[in-house]
Image 1: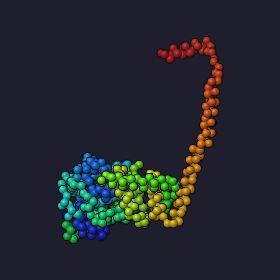
Image 2: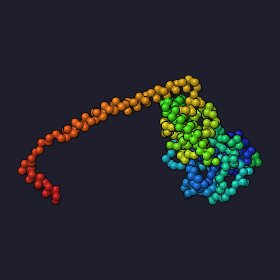
Image 3: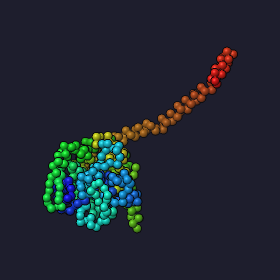
Length: 238
Length: 150
């Protein structure tokens, strides 16, 4: 029986319609790399000299893993999404990102069994962006992430720990709400990362501290470097 | 700081903007930033207990955020207001620089320095009266030294 936490009916529908059964939890520091390069194993990231932005628990404690961990338990994926690289980052936040893979696509990937206390499976291949069908982020980040995603096949959906828990039995439509867990969440503290936002006044106040030449210099160097980067890429391609 | 780091830091801050503000930023701007940010090996976090002005963010990131606000979010009045402020801040900054590095003042300072050095050196070579120790002082010092050795 798959154990699933679904935040709202739309998210549930996307999960069900796309046969999404495996989830990977990470945070927004890894998001930009994933949207550009897909998901890579820790060992592959190191080989390509790309930083390991977020958290495979085991990769931080017991060294690197040469596979990508997925789970069918959204709670576990959310736990992974809330792991911070160091304990001195109190009140410091990036937002949680849950990535979902469809059952149809998993067949194309090599997997292995992971000996672990958690319900998890190891995918030993790198996962290209095209195989990502589902990205779940806090409701307040939906607009932002939808604007970042270039691929129309990726559904960006809201996920909020303060909503409902369901058990879903093999997608046959039998749904039971886990009322105990639901109550625990209702009683518990709301996720602060989904509540904090900067409004127009704050941004205006920050902008008013700048000076003209600083802004213009920045534009000049930034645009020049971006153009230079484009030329270098062309040269490389030839 | 690399451009990719500035882009990633900026995105980390933009992610916490009100949805109404995010809606006004064109998709292609955010996509471009995300593409550049994907090369960054640095992690950025927002302090949830602090306002935007108190966040520990780089000057370049502040410039980029201000530029995005000016170009895509601010209305005409806000733009005029910001442009005036940026000019005013620029003038203040240039005045400060001028005060600090004004060649005339620097020259005056040098002259002052030289005259001070001359005064000090002349003080240094002034005569110091030599006081000869009396026989009692010599004996007392001799005894003191003996005790010290023990």
